[in-house]
Length: 123
Image (cartoon, rainbow, N blue to C red):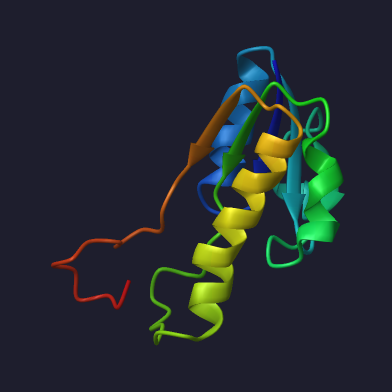
């Protein structure tokens, strides 16, 4: 499969990209500031910001699967109506919309660490 991982060079993403490569998949990591040093050599990187639909939309073209892992750091204390909503809600919507527009058959959305109603973290 050809898989796009948004946030692919982040904490979870770098491990997922490595596992996907180990399983024989073609993998592209999308992030605002790609860091190929934390990824296997086989992983392609591309630049995009999930808060800017136009910057990510084309990256979904021709993919069999997409995984959205973009999020703010888990210790970030978001307030409603702030950048948290823009990244974690708006970014997720942009990624899902781009995947749908390009006919991506498999789409996985992963929330942030600590996203629990009983968590002391504001998520």
